[in-house]
Length: 359
Image 1 (cartoon, helix red, strand yellow):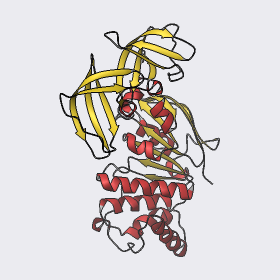
Image 2 (cartoon, helix red, strand yellow; image 1 turned 180 degrees about the vertical axis):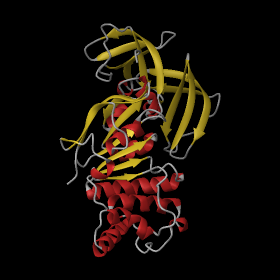
Image 3 (cartoon, one colour; image 1 turned 30 degrees about the horizontal axis):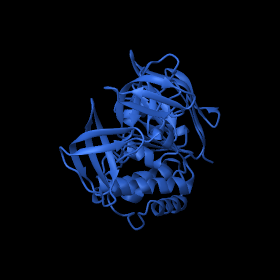
Image 4 (tube, helix red, strand yellow; image 1 turned 45 degrees about the horizontal axis):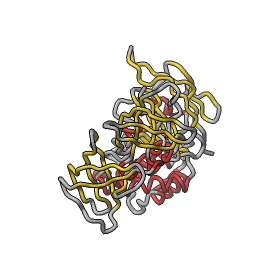
């Protein structure tokens, strides 16, 4: 049975330095939950607290409501895949996968059955006699995954498991991990600094910075409704614009982004922390794909500074008044403009997201 995980106001200090501060989260049974953030933000520290490698300075860790804060890692029935895989190079694939089962003193017959099933899960049938040094990086990663799964853990922990793979292999392995998680229904906690991995794989994401939780939500919530400047800037590309509030109604907000250029957006598209009664300056987050070429609502005119054709899209950097805007136009046989060309743009009201200037 897969277990839920609860961190109850967990803080971890390293001397006088804060590793993580007041992390309070509930991870549901069978959920794919990702810790996302830049290097040093506390995501791996949080994972290691769940694994039992670190003891929290304050707070408690619960699995299905049971306090496991003081339990050693080998008593928590977790499977863990490390960034460097931590495989034994002198052992075969079979021996690596079987290691945890042998520690648990299972019979040879049980070990053989479970290892062969795990190899099948990760599509490494017939590789049992191979040495680890004879495998590619992607195959080694799958051995590490099989070793974690073969013990039938309640919780699977993955610490940046794809960071050593090339781009194509990362994409393929990412799909495999998600496929396995869905098929097995295992509670999975995944650590990454890669926003694309997090967005593609997760049921929910916890964005961290400087040891603190910034936002928890679905990929759609994190991307479309970031609660602050950091989340908006870290998740995907966006245009961040400071603006003065001109008019507030029950449904709409009108702001001046400089030189008398006004933009109007939907009031519901604003972060919960934003108080329009008190704040006269706000920050706008406008995703590049929300800016359209041609005539329409919230018109802008600009000069193209850079032009990039990627096949799927045409990406422009446009100088519009005081602002340089990233613009992404989906390629539908559209003419590609070049540096120095004029372009007319417009932004739908739903494409503007309002945030507080306060962090």
